Length: 161
Image 1 (cartoon, rainbow, N blue to C red):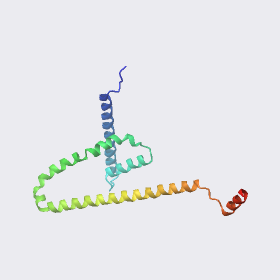
Image 2: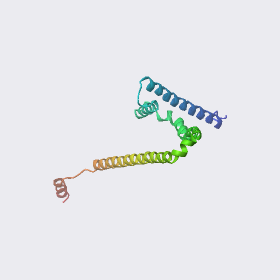
Image 3: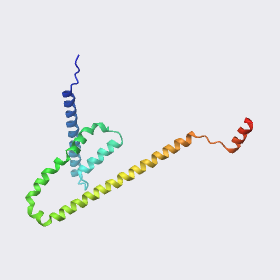
Image 4: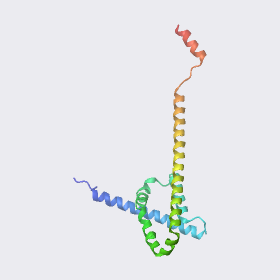
């Protein structure tokens, strides 16, 4: 009997799951945007939404698999979200002629700061994890070694003789 899980069905299921996850992420962003607007919050709704999503994932209330496909697709196609603003910049040619170098310089500086900050944070996190794992290994190896005191060693030698 032929299996019902054909490649086209699997692909359709994965596409539907990805679309559902993207929809849920967009609804979360939209809802948090409305919340921020209602509360007159100085924090943007998208940042509130990311915080809520991080909290749900950290507390294991929301499994990672429930946002994995959608977030992977969004990150993979992130460049497409920047094309409309770049095309819209063409309308401001005079502004670019006068301040183009300053704008590009500030964008490069800001991007460099973000990259350096991320690299520093990741480096510190790896060092912290390495120390934590080393402490665990040392604790487990010390727990397995049973130290003999000198008096016990001397009495053991006398018994053996």
